[in-house]
Image 1 (cartoon, rainbow, N blue to C red):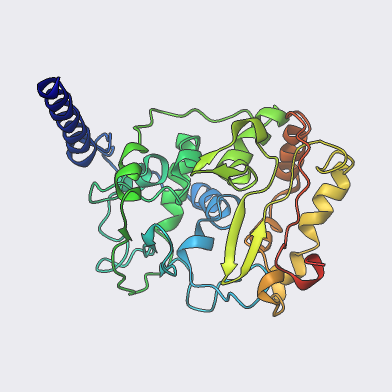
Image 2 (cartoon, rainbow, N blue to C red):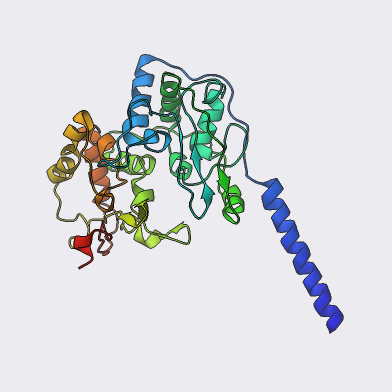
Length: 327
């Protein structure tokens, strides 16, 4: 019996060692980046600017922002230059410099490497990207749109800003190796189908990602768009995403299309003239300043899609650390 137990322990050790070796050295699953350069026509660059700055919100994470002001606007000179986030449980996360600076930014990355990073979560050097970068959502981005984003990135004025690489701790440094997956060609969605196009926009803009609760790093699929995803804005200050399902009591079931659009457009003045200083516990990670510039037809498509998703009853307090919400 003792010999059998030792054999079983040995087999378990071998299995664990083999599994570790596979994850550590056999992953991530990756394909070679596509060759060639994307078309950089004025129309495509303009579309890419809209996607980068408004819809996908790339600049929100890859820019230096003023965390003391409402919705954290980009500081002058801080656009797309990258930044290091405060240390968290997963380690030190760095969003790289996306400007086309050849020494510290994306200037030497190929268009194919940029496309692969955006949609597949593989960096230009072959490493897996931390899944806080929503590449699992951007995997839905059409070929036309992802090429437009790359075309726009090439036009951003280069900024020299050398940053360290991310340092992710165990076990996330292994878990993140299992997430990336190659993406085949993605066709464009018919904009005339408002519900289908709205579904597409909610994916590439992160609506589903941010407005679905997470448990142990995984989205709770039965509560899609139900709100409850917590974000730490500052020490002791959290923001919680609201319920976007058409549930009438705790979601947006009673909100009309006009009210939905007005909710976004009420922040247009902040987007154009600057947002005010706000207490940390009342601030938000919702990218209102970018989304306030979204085209009306796109917001209408999102609204149309949200009306079709299953209603989830989930009451949310969006700013639980505000003194007025602790009574």
